[in-house]
Structures are given as structure tokens and as C-alpha cells.
Image (cartoon, rainbow, N blue to C red; front, side, top):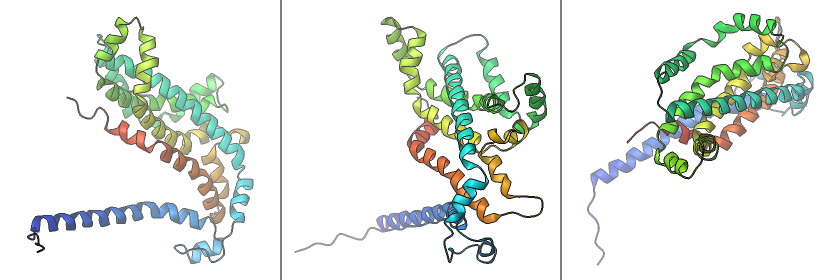
Length: 285
């Protein structure tokens, strides 16, 4: 004869609470993703439909908006310029940040606390307050209207974050690994490139995606330091659709749709490493 299990109120409330949590997270995901969905749908509307029906799907999908926006804004050249600047700045940031973090995390020396405080001070400086002195400095060394006018400032302002994130990760790695490598005759450069650098990939991935978003979307530095049309980056190319009198919203949305795709792809590729890097080094023991 089949026996029925007694009703457990605690188990029922646990199921209800899990269901409510899932519903809440789903609603949060919808609210978070809706602006992106709105951007993609607005890219295929006319200006009249953008004004009259901003929150509805297009009645007729204007696929030509993408090609028109690509042509008018010279998006191809802008994407190449942004890619060069972003990759170069990221390479410098990750290499220099990993080297500095390795020294600060694995060695003990007299000026260690001072250097950590100095890098912390670098994180507190408002970036845009340095535009005028940076412009004067770059002009004196003849770096305006070059890729280096963006690469060097980007690297300098991203280094403090790269050092702190990577140093926190490297601190959690047991020192016995280094001691065993030293006994086997491996030098410090070998330990760094063969062991510490591969082990710190989660932290470096976090730094890379944060730096990528900052470099790719920066407008102020590119506007001040770049005046040659052939060197303009993606944010500068998006501004050609807005004048002092009107804005072509359909082409603006189409161009923004093209510009946002690389950031989405980069995040999807490195999302697992980003989560690992964010949590690594948070708990010691």
C-alpha cells in the first residue's frame, strides 16, 4: 500500500522562495537587456517612426540604415583605428600591470607600502581633469594626431586597476610553487612568464574586459587629442550624425548597433574568466 509522505512546510516555503527568486532575476534580466533590444530595433526604423512609435517594433524594417550609417560615418576606418588603439593599450596595460603586480605581491621590500599607496592615488585622480596638461605635454613631444596620443594615456590610467586586481590574485597563490621552481634552477623571469602569468589569466581577463570597454567607448580623449579624420575612433564617428540643429536618429542607432557588437562579443568570450578574476583573492585562508 502506497504511503504518503507527511507535508513539510519548510520544504514548501523553500520552493516558493526559489520560485520568487527566479521570477525576480528574470524580471531584472528583462529590465537590464531591454535598452539593448530597444537599440537594435530602433536601428531599423525611420526618423518619423522613431518619434511616433519609439517602443514598438518597426512596421517596415529599414535594413539599409546599417549600410548607410557605415558609409556616412566611415565606420570601417574607425573600427580599425579603435581596434589598433585598444589592442595596443591593452597589451601594454596587461604586461606592465602583471609585472608590477608580481613584484608587489610576491616580494618584500622597503618601499612596497609607498608604491601601493602611489598606485592607489592614481586610481583617485579624475581622468578628465588631466586633459589640459596632457594636451600640452603631448603637443610638446609631437604625439598629437597619432595612435600614441591615446595609447599612452589609456595605459597610464588603467595601470592602477590592473595592478590591484592582479596583485590580489597573485597573493592567493602558494609561495611553495616559486620555491620549488627556484630549487629547480628557474629564474624569476622564468617563474613570471612560465608560471605566474598563466596562473593569473582570470585576473588579467577581468582587467582586459574592463580596459576594453573603457578604451573602446572613450570619447573625450579622442576628441581632444585626435583631429585627423583618418585617425578618428568609433565614438568620434558616431558624433557625425548630430549637429547643432538636428540629429539623424535612425543612422545614429544603426551606427551604435554596429559599434556595440564588439563589446558584446568580447564579454561573451571572457565572461567566465571575468567572474573568476572578480572573486579571486577576495578570501584568504
